[in-house]
Image (tube, rainbow, N blue to C red; front, side, top):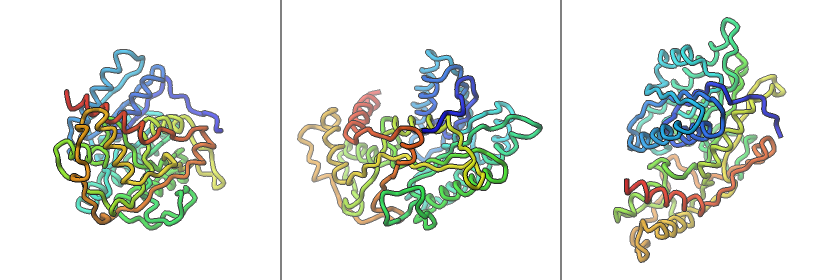
Amino acid sequence: MLSKNIELSNKTVLITGAAGFIGANLAMELLKTMENIHIVGIDNMNHYYDVSLKEFRLKQIEELLENCSGQFTFVKENIADKTVVESLFQKYQPQIIVNLAAQAGVRYSIENPDAYVESNLIGFYNILEACRHSYQNGAGGVEHLVYASSSSVYGSNKKIPYSTEDKVDNPVSLYAATKKSNELLAHAYAKLYGIPSTGLRFFTVYGPAGRPDMAYFGFTNKLVKGEKIQIFNYGNCKRDFTYIDDIVTGVKAVMQCAPLPNEESVKYKIYNIGNNQPENLLDFVEILQDELKAAEILPYNYDFEAHKELVGMQPGDVEITYADVSELERDFGFKPSTSLRDGLRKFAQWYKGYRSV
């Protein structure tokens, strides 16, 4: 196991995408567990999905502040605006950066490429540049840059489980290409300017107050309205569903271990964070149905078969995602372990309460 070389207590941490699913949950975990931490959160609150959900997450953070020693400063701005990023770094001088701001969604990237170039490429470049300039005039600067990559970089690789040693040169969507680009840019900046950088390839993150464009949330919304759900590739897909708490535990552990120089003298590392247990989509839908009934969101006699439609594969999609997390386990003594049923049960219980608000 790696030894911690970064103390998070009494530090300033910049989280981009702070009103997002992972960003907000990470902020709450850090505020709960780290003394006198100052989190600066930036998010442009875009309308890719219902903004009220982002506001709900920010309210959760706000309520948490009453019982912790930390601070949370929220900035509603876009990291694609270079002057905004520069002023943030000048004003708050963050020591740890967690870049989670991104335009998400594989299918959306096919129809709206501009949004991906702006957020995922230009936005990340602005963060890297600000990190580079943080060392000027003898300043301590950024101690660790942690950034979100994605399992989508593996494309349609046939070898499973996906290992960080695998070749990832053939993305099948623009979203995947932007995430691979992030990894390349981070490596270049780590090599040229000594920015310690760790990329995290997330695998199908789910849980309470998640993203409505993800299958579990979108399916629930449709089933509640009596609409049909479409199951792609006729159900012959597998996903390595990873519960939000496991993702946050992994991110927090990684934040505290800036990479040491590798054999090329570059402070750069990439990890997979997945459940290491892919689930068939049809099994996933059956578990979701069970838990929605148990939470009394759907009636016990709900005719599920009548609301299910098997359709072909979507452009840009892949048949399977499956994470090899052996490096994460080796370096941090941790691997995601929340079962899909337990995770979906927690989502269903949250959804029931959220609908009634």
